[in-house]
Picture (tube, rainbow, N blue to C red):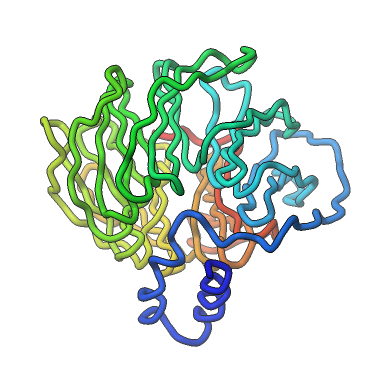
Amino acid sequence: MKSVWSKQLKNGLNVIGYGLLLCMVPFVYASGVPKAGGPQPLPKIKTEAIKKPPILVLNSLSASVSLIDPVTFAEIKRLPVGKEPHHLYMTPDSKSVLVANAAGNSITFIDPKTGDVQRTLNSIVDPYHLRFSPNMKWFVTAANRLDHVDIYTWHGTEAQEPIKLVKRLPASKTPSHLMIDDQSKTLYATMQDSNELLAIDLETQQPLWEVPTGKLPADVFLTPDNTKLLVALTGENAVQVFDVSGIKGVLVKRIQTGLGAHAFRAQGDGQHVFVSNRADNSISRINLNTLEVVDKYPAPGGPDCMEMSDDGKTLMVTSRWSGKLTFIDLTTHLVVRQIPVGKSPHGVWTLEHATRQ
């Protein structure tokens, strides 16, 4: 059923417009993407020496990671990983990038400088989204298919057992994206199919509060002062802003962006954040002081996760529906390059990136 909807949506972009597309959103944006029809053969790509840290692109329906050379802009290697890799995150010691293989129940460790696979942790239940706390104590995963949030302690990249499960918290329907505050005290999680925002105390591993959101909440982003939490509404055309400075989150604003608001990426200047509007084929830039959209960029092919070049000039975004990594020049507002990768590219990351604040 999921594969059928995926194909219909892909065709629908060309013939039926956004009206019908919005009706399909719940099927498309359920984070458990359509299952591939069995193992997919990897393309024969010539392996070359990597002179600079590669750009990593997760191919959710190909069970692989594409390594892009940032100098030649060619795909130089494709690493097989677990089934349905969706998101990735750097370890606190900067020695590994963790790839969360949701349907494969595993996490792959990749060297951020070379792109080599270092190790694989198995029996990690449904790691869809993942986060480390700033104090390097906690590691958290969202089990998107199985409706729970797992809180682990972190013991280091090279430890025989890098993570140890402390608490498995049942959650509402389909926990999606995670965010942890700068004090490593509070974890925020969206529930995409029950339209809720959940706050959890990391020290006690107990829920603090839960509030309703708009349709299909996905990614979350905290303002630099940790008082406002932005929630992207993939089932709508907006970002909601919650004041989280009190004892419970309070909705204070709605920012209209574009249809299918989904993922965030800070520009790196401490003043702006980007949000990808997947069904609108655009990216909005939000001023974090005024909480208003101040710019918009074209992003064809269903934009999803983003990465910012270290010079602050180029935004990289995975084009989920067209199977490409897209490069956008922030000065000219033009798409300057698209690189074919695997099926349904999702997360993107590189060691040489702008700060995430």
